[in-house]
Image (cartoon, rainbow, N blue to C red; front, side, top):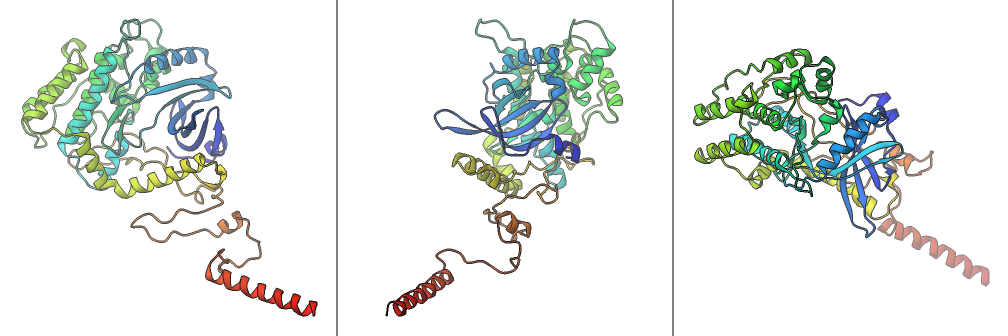
Length: 454
């Protein structure tokens, strides 16, 4: 997603206050919300980075959507698991509905695969299986979750796709946006195919990762998420997309659920892996794994027997090895912005941080990784976006980078006289030249006073 002039005009100047949050980076815009990185400060002075999703005005003003979103967000807020992004706030501020949730510093799966593709780095099989196994852990927990009254919450994700699988720089895998697809669809009575419900489903979920019953607009249960997780596994093992074409074409493919056999990419015991994938992607829900937990157990047994088990710790080391420079730069920029908020600095003296690297737009993948979907918004330097530069530039170059170019407009932003030469350095307080000048001036004043008194 690219930022155009119209979108920039709609967004508030950052940083800005939004209720008890300070928004300081626009991460992107989806079909439902503007997504911001924000700082939350509690009454006791504890501060933390969070993600704030501001629901778009057209949806915020829709009573049906608002009621469904609130219902789904209340259910999602009851989930507390290592592989699920925590939702901890829901409200309305400045006439905009919003959801505040845990900030996962890293990539989504789509972005990570795009970066690996561009770098021509294969994703080892053990890490591909780790991503799917951890996603299944989150799904299994959510599907089995019960409320405080002991009754099942009946949660179905409905949009298990690469953009909703978040991967932290520590190698953690977390699912986000539980129930959002249902709010967008606002399903009424469950039953047979209905054109309007199918049309809403196409907005609510991504056609390339839909179970056939979802693509047809039928009733859904947890097995629809099992099918979507099966597509993730198929694509990670095959190194390419399962469904291709326009949205209409992919929707037709999803309805038919004609899944080709898993290509042989040299993985051990391919026959057994193919059997696991085929069961997860069975067109009829009754022929699939009954639960995400059952799918997980079969996949873990395969990984253990074939020595393809990996830990988040090792996965994090793999990410650091290949993305260390980007990780360090991103952390420094966001820490700078967050620290400036914590120490009471004028928020106008620091600029927005950079979004994670975008995913590749097209192209086949190397070995196991694959790139999916349209690249997200790319954060360009402020001078390229025609946005005002920060008034102070105090951050030095990142490790391994050259000396940064400081635009001449920075001097003017600092309040320097307009007639000052751009190439002439100023005097730094308490430096040797500064002390020499002060000494000469003091001596001259002292001599003047001496001769005047005589």
